[in-house]
Image 1 (tube, rainbow, N blue to C red):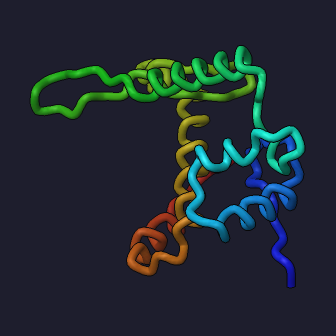
Image 2: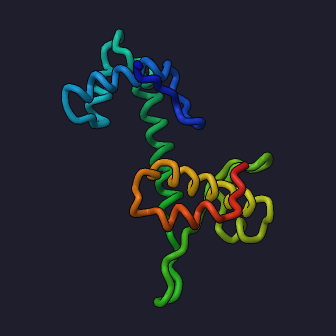
Length: 153
């Protein structure tokens, strides 16, 4: 049976997953896959993966800067007392009324934001459990995750 490929639920790649999967499979047969190798292989206009990338350098640069901004927002911490771990300052929260990075204090204070963050935490835990399911060394962790009352909506 031939391999069937699909994108994950949240993936926003603009090409057929079967086309992408087969192209990556061919590349992998020739050597180890790296992000740089995939980009290089996608450069020709007729490459199977070409349409998955933004080739307008001005647009791509702006998207890269936005990703750098997200990295900054995810990574900044505030240092408290010496005996405390530095605390995350901003969390990305998406609700019907908010889709932005908000302060930890605001997440703690607003039930809607806290519920959204807890739902995202649940999705992340379930995703990790699914991604690493074959690692039998993690069986105890998977059991605990399975017993949690996770809300993923």
